[in-house]
Length: 90
Image 1 (cartoon, rainbow, N blue to C red):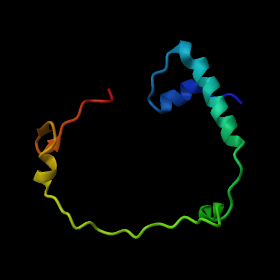
Image 2 (image 1 turned 30 degrees about the vertical axis):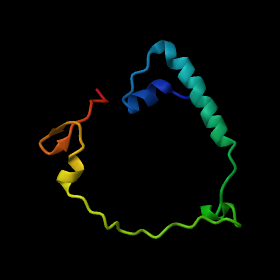
Image 3 (image 1 turned 30 degrees about the horizontal axis):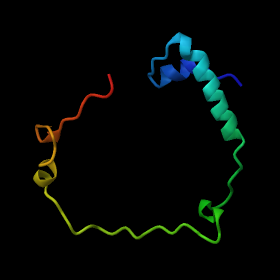
Image 4 (image 1 turned 180 degrees about the horizontal axis):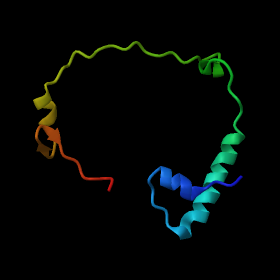
């Protein structure tokens, strides 16, 4: 199987250097091969272990309500009522 890493990078808006394309292609092919070997799961996914079925907790609304100002009091930097964080994506 051949994976077009350049095309995937373009779709994901990622910049991958040409010298690293072969490594990424090899890594992605091994990931796809591993996923293809996984067994099929049919029916209800919670039935994977019938002795210990997954039970979801009841969603309960919390009683400790904080105001916006109380929540933002510990923010290291604020601007226009919003928390300012470092830029992570260019």
